[in-house]
Length: 455
Image (cartoon, rainbow, N blue to C red; front, side):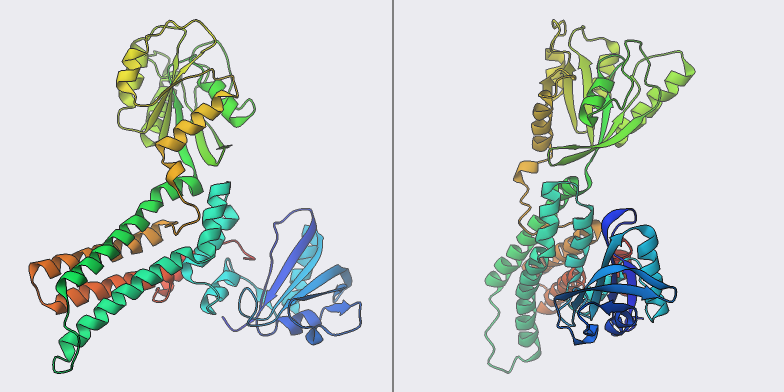
């Protein structure tokens, strides 16, 4: 199937100024030629790569639309194959009709991610770069987009190749020393080898450490807003959302369910949950909401614990503070605009991070943003450096790191160089799997299952 010609709509479904149908494969030019008539009278097959031409697109029922055709000739295309892109007016009917015409003229519908899969199989991208394409498409912030573009440009691939090259050199020297003792081969310097392997461990640990912060930037933070009733949770939710997402009322227990939304706070994406007020209650429905709030608190990556600074701390406040002990939390003492009646010392003893805010004041969002960035080490994240973007990549980096660490241990314990060499070769295999040079078909399928059709 990799040698046939595929077609797909490459732009989102819906009404737009322009929509694109993409063809790729050995018959892409012939398929397009059978259904277009170029205005300059030349044939599509006569055009050079990286050129465009205006024309009309036809099917068996007649003219479909005017269009601009762009030709990319193999191997200088995204997929490494001949590619034709037909840009017509953006509308579902027109684009589906053009796609249907492509299939009637000899192409077949592309599967999800098949264009990028072909780019990988044809050596245009390694596996980490292919994954970065999906991350670019889904990026929702400046840092996330920059990190994905850095990976698309090959930063992770180059770092993996650099470490792999060092390990290959060590393995080759050991293998030569073991297999050809009679030859004049430079003797293995055990101290130098150990130092070199320790350097590889350090590099792999540094690479693995980029995952947690990078994931926060790419995927966002599951954030629960908790507190007793009427402390301003819903007001904070609405401030972060930019509109009235939760009902604000002076009546206790207004929020019975969990209200969710995803918001952008600077470069951070927060998956917010405004929970029911946590307190002791005899109302069975409210009690269910309180239990849901506790459950959401326990699962959250970040908890915003809200307290009413205009009232003294009570037993419910202390119960909430106790429930937040095991999770990343920022305490927010709300209603700064009212006279403060709360003693902050008990909260300062329980929370490392505490802010005094007014949940209805947009300027206080900047204070909260800075506190979250510090908590998740966003400031130290270098989006222009090699980073680990997903669990697959982190798993391979960790596997490589563990194998090199075992090689160091074997070397220091005095076992044979054969055992050291086996560990180094296992680390090399993990890095080659990371970049896709030795990735199984199952891994490749899993990577491209994330993609949309048309990319």
